[in-house]
Amino acid sequence: MNTVRQVFPYVYLFTSNEGEPGAQRDTFIVACSLQKLDFENLFSSGGYWKTGPFAWTERDAEDQFHDFGEMQSILELARGYLLKDDFAPLDNLLAPVFVNRSSRDD
Image 1: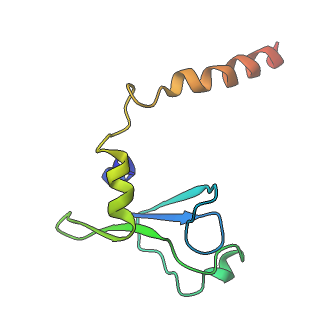
Image 2: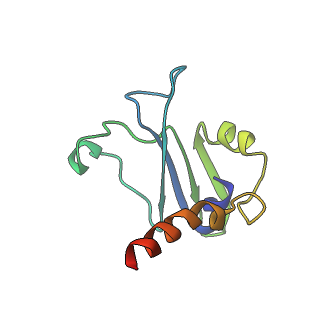
């Protein structure tokens, strides 16, 4: 969340479960946008969500962050980390994909 907030002015966090996140296992969906999203009629966008995000950040014209919902709690859990090679070894994660693809191309 800290990383995407640096790139996108609007960041929204949805739960894959109906309603608010609870004690059961959940998958969070992060929606990053260059413009503010309209939550008035989410059901018409595909019928999956009926409510808005449970946490979100909007950046104003002065580049100040405004956090809503449970965003402060989410950011506390992230402990201020920004994703970089030390925390997101994408090359290691994606290497099997490229090896698998090149073996099929032979």
